[in-house]
Image (cartoon, rainbow, N blue to C red; front, side, top):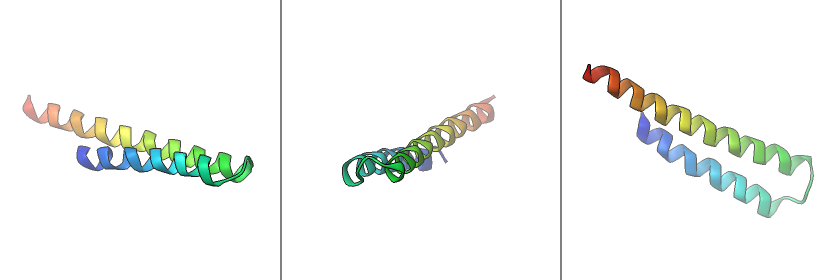
Length: 59
């Protein structure tokens, strides 16, 4: 599960960078940037949660 989170984080990063480069300054650009940041946050959450499950199994 942690590997899925690690793969999702760059996807959110590139979505954000792509939105900044491709869209003119407008509401569409802001929406895509927020979606990209949300994808990054979800990737971090999945990755952290994967590490937490691994720790609890070792005890």
